[in-house]
Amino acid sequence: MYKSLAIGSIIFFNALGFSPKSDIAINEEKPMVDSLKTKQYQNPRPKNVILMIGDGMGITQISAGLYMNGNKLNLEKFPVIGLHKTYSGNSLVTDSAAGATAFSCGVKTYNGAIGVDADTFAVQSVLEEADKNGYATGIVSTSTIVHATPASFIAHQKHREMYEAIAADFVKTDIDFFVGGGKKYFDRRNTDERNIYQELEELGYYVSDYFKEDLAACQIPKNKNFAYFTADDDPLPRASGRRYLRLASKMAISYLRNQPEQGFFLVIEGAQIDWGGHSNNSDYIVSEMIDFDKTIGEVLKFAVRDRETLVVVTADHETGGYSILDGSTVGNLKTAFTTDYHTADLIPVFAFGPGARMFSGIYENTAIHDKLRRALGFL
Image (cartoon, rainbow, N blue to C red; front, side, top):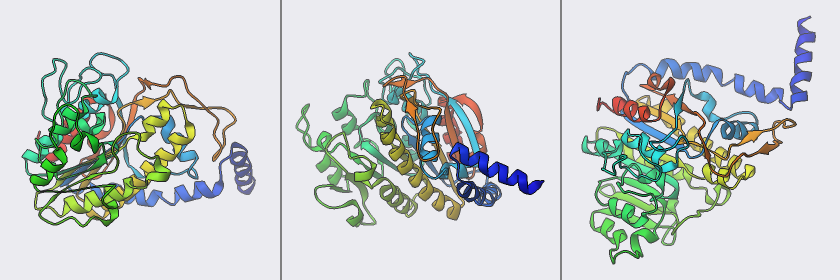
């Protein structure tokens, strides 16, 4: 009887487009997940915190990436999962600026706001607080470094499109490491004659860019902070032609963990999942989702070895009203969109490492800021 049930199950799952081989591969990961639970919770607080933001990454974006990647993702390895409420201070549907400001500063603010509250007053970000408390800090993004999500952790401006003002804020906080596009907002400015690229060098940064040398070729002196510009402006290349998110993230971890500070706080953004949603382009979403998940895998490898690092993965909002339709199979999806903007969907939060249990449940997006501060010992 059991043999016939097993054969029937295989026929059933094959009809749905599932591969038994893929299911077995996922089951083999379960002991690893169980071991992560026991090993990583021995210390109540982490030494390091890595926040990974898949811009525009909702449940369907994750599902599409999984089904187009052999029915598996590194996200499946996280033992703690929660949900956050994305709405902003002035709209049920948030934008990236207000969404990221909720994470960075812990306030519900208006759409378009960068590190300021509803009355446009600057609010200290968790990255700035980490810097003041002796942590090394870093940001890596596949968009311009002055774009809404990375900007919200280091800048304080009334509107997200004030790119040159945002760039000027980068010399006001001693961020140790950053990689992203947007070089022209630093060295060829329209609002003033400042050369912030040069100012960073004068402040002791090793500054480089895509024109001078490849990122992989950079040899960062031990006594220097690091800034690297991957492009002049958006749009940056897609994942297939970009290939730097994993490299930059690994470089950031290697660099920050070897600084003399007591630990590090790092923000990693997979920005272009959002762009695929705005374009209503399923292939674009999937390629960016898989690229982001591969980076998650590299970060998890470090965290498993380190045993003192909290990794939190989430998104600011969902983009596109993306859905997977009837007739889809693993490796061949039929999809649709309800909008070319964002939606008000609840967004998943994945956590691994010391302090991960704080991220279970359903809570406001501002609670992520509070939980990060608590993990870092600021609350």
